[in-house]
Length: 423
Ligand code: ADP
Ligand code: ASP
Ligand code: MG
Image (cartoon, rainbow, N blue to C red; front, top):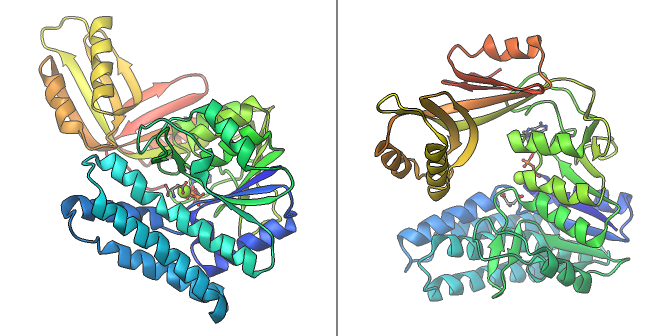
């Protein structure tokens, strides 16, 4: 079987859904599993629903009206008037169920509520697309990913139960058919909905591919493939034609947000090729990620992570920052859910660049201050260049006047800079 994944940008409007169908038809409907994200920016919209609900749990969140209107408009542009009725009813029914959940919910846990709510983006998009397949006379089967992707109960960032998932997928998906399912969502042992972390639909595609021993995965994007930098930030950029699994994991790890970092490993284990192709020019070759040479062409790759925090710790009495302190520092990072991006230490100082994803910086800094002199610089950017050369280094250094930290290994150079400029 082959696995196709369509992200939010590819199905943001009726034109996008039509294009999806054309791409699937051109590649042969049979033996295809289609993983789809929420339409456009709907995941952000559902996040607002959660925020409104946490502030005023007794009120129906207003944002749900925008969400309903957005989907209904797509339906109106996609279907003939008669066929609109069924699709609209489906959308309304899902949203009604969600309102009932919010009314009855007793759990104060925001992460739990988040997953029950935000998962609706994918549930709605796949329902609409399934209906459209039917209307076009194309045979397809809608699959609830929550019956397939089994996870622990770590809401918002659930971890996969591979054994249970493999078994569930084996019973749900049979070779030969055309299946439409949701990215990003799964369920725990109690069948509560879980999510795999923002942008997790690529990972879903890899999970299904692994379980099904798929022949390939193709993720359809709004870019020509994997480029040597994010075109929203760098100009010019170049297309990478081939990337090894190992190099792709490195790029994703450093923050090349075109592929979710967890996507590669399951594919690498079964040597399933991953294609990244443009949905608006589907005949293009794009990028292929398989075994072999690290990157073709061999050029420097630029990655930037914005909104980082640089924390500099120094011992109070010129004593060494020894292993014991380091393990304590890491424990605190873990406790306050800081993602550590880069570390550098000397005898009496320790610098760490972190992502403050959950807004818990103040607590962390207070805890660290009990033991160290602490300096914090917020809003820094972390630049990484893989396969760097002097020209690539100059490209960053000539733009960025205030480099706070630099770290270099054979293949990779990183800079923490104070006030990022755009290239
Ligand atoms: P999806 O629609 O699947 O969610 P994303 O928006 O997550 O797609 O990923 C596509 C975006 O990733 C592109 O629009 C681009 O701005 C960004 N991006 C970041 N790094 C790269 C890179 N190295 N190559 C191509 N695109 C990149
Ligand atoms: N819809 C989810 C998000 O926007 C998952 C995904 O698109 O990959 O994060
Ligand atoms: Mg995305």
